[in-house]
Length: 188
Length: 138
Picture 1: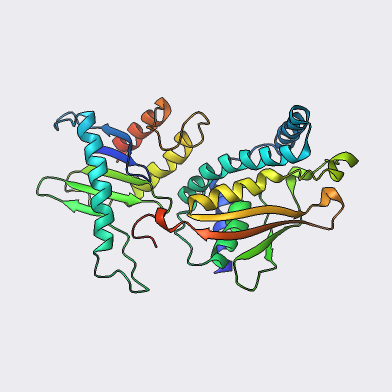
Picture 2: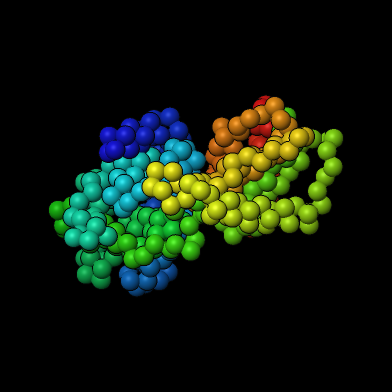
């Protein structure tokens, strides 16, 4: 199953997506975060805004992913985690975070990002580190938005970030509940 | 020949409809809305009453085609709950590949337009044009 998702992801990245300059993306995202910091002056609020923006991206991005890959609903959270890391992240960022740290009830897992293109060339000022800025928080919102459109209510947060001095970046995904009342009929 | 296309959102509301044949009677916008709501309802009913429901391997994913003696209605439901419907003549037996392309266009021209409100009707010239090209090519 994992091998199949990996292939779908590779295939999608190679053929099905338009590529854009990484530098342009880094400039754009960096400028966005800095502007938010200037506007809100509170790193907690910036985190929230990045998450909201990510959420709006996620709810649209999921249909794009499904249209390009033709994937159907996953049977369990393990398959979902594999699709997120091997197809989703691969298609849009060309990285494949590893899935790890499953909780005992299989409702939580972590995505370990060895390499995050948003972070290249970025260094956080000490105040930002102290006040808890998660630079790539938009990614958490994207995952949360995409999963909500697949009828899963989740809490997605950064727990470690290389920009804060940790060894790797880690995103924790926690399934709060399935939104059963919204499942398209016949798909449950 | 594809006569018309309808797109229905998760809640059963009509977000797009277009006729491509000059010869068939046109639905008024009210009738189109009623059609969408009704279809959404019977699609839900169909999978509920399916005899395959409940068994693990054969989950019924709802109506795929409805035949009459003059035309056929095709339906493709995405995992996110959007239904793409095409009304065609009896020559087309399965329209899944065309409807998948329409899904791709929806995700491009509707979803990537930041000013498009999800769940609201699609008002995009690009979408109309591209869809027209696809339908005429099929």
